[in-house]
Image (cartoon, rainbow, N blue to C red; front, side, top):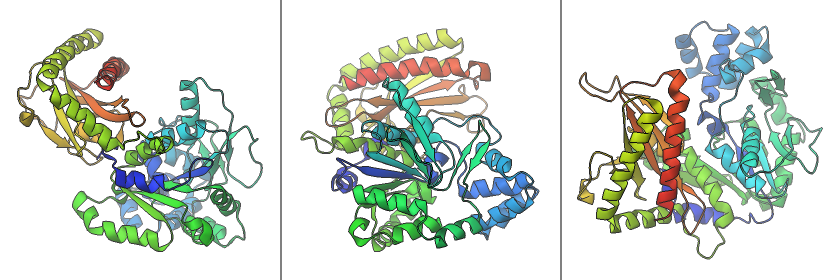
Length: 465
């Protein structure tokens, strides 16, 4: 599945929420795991090894199989001479930089910036500062100057003009090497659960008194968040919505179908309305749709995607000739820019959870029935499917997948967004570049820059159809 496949069933849940004046978004570990940061189990394993509590990866994995990650963190903390440094190195892998914000961070930031400070409250269970970075990135794109405040305790608070991010479990800054008010170990969680009126619970309750709360990227494993939401008043419980992504549960499609009803019912039983999706990026697209839901001409992404696909099919013969010629020109530009052989393919979504191999510079398709279709989603066996399912640039080495005579050894995939009547921009297509060899690190930026120009051109062309 990709953002282009979100249907009216998903959007109807959000349409019932009153998000006009005030609402809140809470992001869990899935938002950051999607951009390469460790989930809770992986973080616990890194902590055990870096602290010296356990020497090797295999033993740490076996140890965690029968342990609560919060309890394992106790062992790591006890063994670490410099706990703050161990935490920061475990989260960021020893890098002084954070990864780029992901789709969920950027969607939440964009929503916040469309409203006055405080109208969209931003909460996170994560230690990273990716929501803050996303706000800065989106503000820079729209030419807006903003001030930020990272909240990790009851006081101090940000100014009324600040975009405040509530870090319910504290924050880790890879640049300053600061660890602020971290809640990770079992004793830290236990102390927070029994605390009378913790600032985190008060902040969530106050936010819910003003409007709905949307949870995304969370598995609801943390004892404190369960306790806080369980303690909400009956009057506000129907204002809580959670995006449940198959990606976060680690289930394949068949398994997910078998447990979906039970999954939905367990959330309904605690007063939370579930929204079922396949990938984390689906929730990000759904958040982008929120400001458009009341428009009289609104159409969910799946319908907009199908409308565009049908437009392409309606002019199939002419577009095949035209698009192949354009790709041939793009390929020439690409080879001139990077000085290496390559091939390009344009893929389109069909609005039915598939990516379609639409056009290539070396062929013109005569029959729509001959077009290859591959599944989209985070666990697609095809890199283009993963790219569309995550809305991220992806690269894959094909050496292990190809035989000795195959020409192409590496592939890069870039998502392409389109603008269509009926809603906001959404990822509808992808461009893939096949390379004879993996690009050298010094040339990677040149490849991505050249491909980015090509993807931008296709964004304009497809939007105009």
